[in-house]
Figure 1 (cartoon, one colour):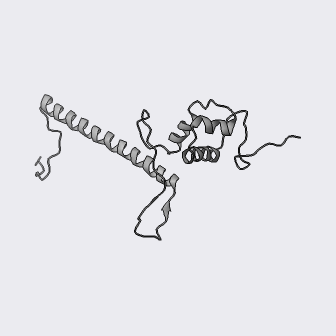
Figure 2 (figure 1 turned 135 degrees about the horizontal axis):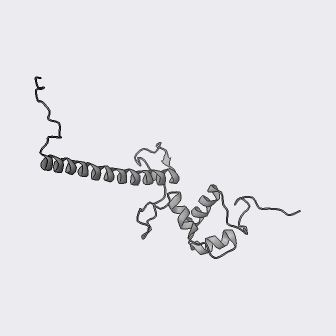
Length: 148
């Protein structure tokens, strides 16, 4: 009967196939960020293989450890931040929550930019239609209703 290591709690172990739970992936990322080891060394530590094929970096994007939207340059988000450093009783935001907030801000900025572009496109379309077809599309406020 063979013993099988369960999870990362039993220390460093070798895996034949690299299938990790979400918590194990986060622990691998945390180990990488907190140690001076390379991704290759971390991968070898947890799997016994040297080829990680970019999985650690992929997980970092997936779980919000990297906040830069441009994947050509990597920007790591700093560790835990306090909401109000003046107030010692204020709880610190966990690193995961901080990364989630940063990712949400990026998503909202992207949505805002898209809606601003849509607004400009609609305004341009209305102006062209009014000019080319000689009709009034924009609603005029403070006008008296027509008497028919």
